Length: 213
Ligand SMILES: CCCCCCCC/C=C\CCCCCCCC(=O)SCCNC(=O)CCNC(=O)[C@H](O)C(C)(C)COP(=O)(O)OP(=O)(O)OC[C@H]1O[C@@H](n2cnc3c(N)ncnc32)[C@H](O)[C@@H]1OP(=O)(O)O
Image (cartoon, rainbow, N blue to C red; front, top):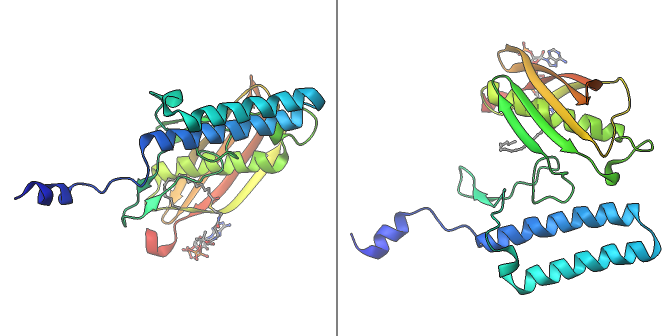
């Protein structure tokens, strides 16, 4: 076998360099800081926030040494069909400026996110928007289900109980666990905890479509 034949059997190269993957996540982080700064400052403070981020982005674009040694957490990868896949998830992906981002941990039948949320997630003053409460719980319960159930499951039903406001600017624990598996149906529940207080609870049903089971 020639050297070129050996090379052609290797996994195909990803469509961007590790430096560009790191640049994409750096830009996403700058977008997050900009969003928080645009909402949280006015006048000259606002101008300073924008200027700082534009400068940081220009430096990173102009000199890849700025990101030297920084590895992207979610570089593009190939899916099972060989298509390039970028993790777009608006809760998890370090490449998506909408995602907080958060730390994910899985243990047994339980998934946990830890996150401190800034101003762009605000609903009531200093508290998390209720729709985003549901987004976080949907995602963490889905991750618990994904570990336990066969195939990929989709949220069929999700019930949220808002016990008390979920605070911004302090660390939250967002927990999901599987309670029952009945064939294609997986039931799960969870909560958002700030300090010792349970602020919101969720329970729901995930179903794996017949074709993916
Ligand atoms: C995806 C690729 C992943 C790759 C992994 C890479 C890592 C990626 C990393 C990060 C990704 C994170 C992603 C997080 C996402 C979070 C989760 C979401 O938000 S999902 C989006 C929102 N949900 C939908 O869009 C679903 C829309 N609905 C549907 O598509 C269908 O309704 C579906 C598939 C859920 C079910 O369709 P049917 O036709 O299979 O269901 P039927 O046959 O009606 O019901 C099945 C059984 O369940 C019972 N059932 C239905 N509803 C029930 C209920 N409320 N209570 C009890 N039983 C119920 C039924 O009676 C039936 O039972 P009997 O088999 O006949 O015994």
